[in-house]
Length: 368
Image 1 (cartoon, rainbow, N blue to C red):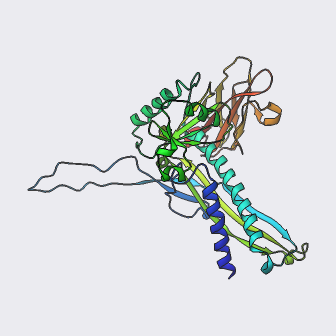
Image 2: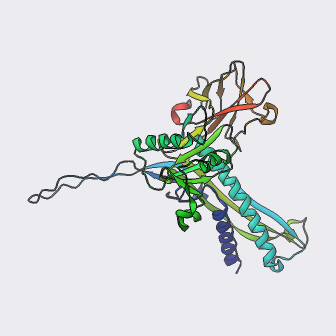
Image 3: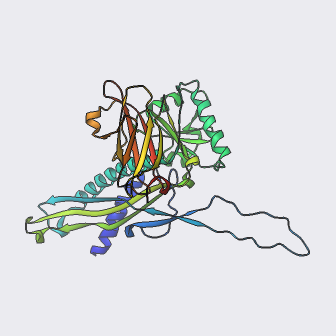
């Protein structure tokens, strides 16, 4: 019975989580991987080439071609837990409505955190561009330019999405080219999209990353791996030596995200974005050197490795609590591994964030 409850509780959390997520599976991320996230690593199939087509010879037939699929390793670095005490109940006597309420709340919080983590990975792994300005008269042209770039990169035309911030959504809604969601059918509404423009499903995403306007992409080129390492359950705490007549809702969920092809995910910043470059560190293993070009002379820079949240516009340098860049533009960062995300923030003369830049480290960036 206890095992059945664990499965039922976990299913409830997953159902709520799937509903709350803005960066939904199948819309923004795919779930195409092999292995168990609970083991700490999975393998993602990567194959950009298509099946070869040849002329057929009626007399001699056709020689068979061979196809191979490469697998990219994906480390699972996110491990989140639910552990909330429900005092005054024995494990068998917790009311179902109380359990459901706490599970609902836990799933909502987990979904918000998963969206935050997924968004950071999307931005850091994307092709980043800056545009001078966006208005309701040029927003459509900007989106068409993104569409053209994705077409040239051979990104499939179907199932493309456009994650837009509320300010950008306001411009799209005022654009004469915008198509109302009412004409798109139930499938689009269920995906969380609010409309379609230039072939993109438009999804409003309340992200506060400094100067970010939108992210365009295709779910084929970004993966989410997720699994309960400990199914959600009601845990009797009587054996703890501290709690008497108390129980807790507990469970652990492990997950992570990976961008497979940067040209298929495109982030647009307005009015500007920091340009970052990386080189191998020259001192000890695990070192990488990150260099940024300030947008305004005498502005200062600070960085974080694997930030819990992306930096919002206007945040003060004190509140940001990052590490200052030496010489104003460069920093050797130690202890790096493949997949680490480096966020660099530019602060103006008032010590307020005015721009950000992101880079995802590869083996070529880190001293072996």
